[in-house]
Length: 136
Image 1: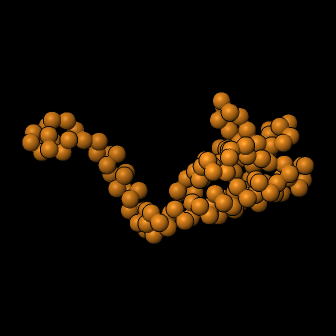
Image 2 (image 1 turned 90 degrees about the vertical axis):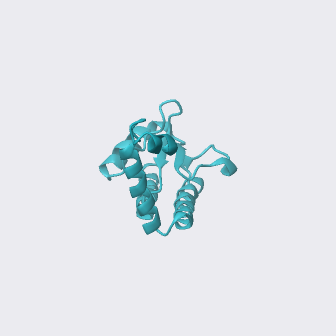
């Protein structure tokens, strides 16, 4: 595609400049974080922390086979579905947002993408444990 742009003095079509700019910012940020290997290690640590909290709980569960689990989107359910509304409300009050699961699946879902710091997952796990102690 760049060959066409160059051959036509940038008049063939306009490249998606904002998308290219944003991608460059993301690439710079990734490098500042230590590169892809460092981000991968951090994502594994975050996902492991959250899955261990879910798997070690009497209130929460995750039906996904451990070999197929995502490191980015962690779905989970409450063994007492009637508590889901209270969980979401208390989480919202604690500053933990957007935890409602996908409308076609239900339950809860924590999205822990690259930009989510470990401290954010630690805060979620601490909240989940506190909620379990007080509600279950």
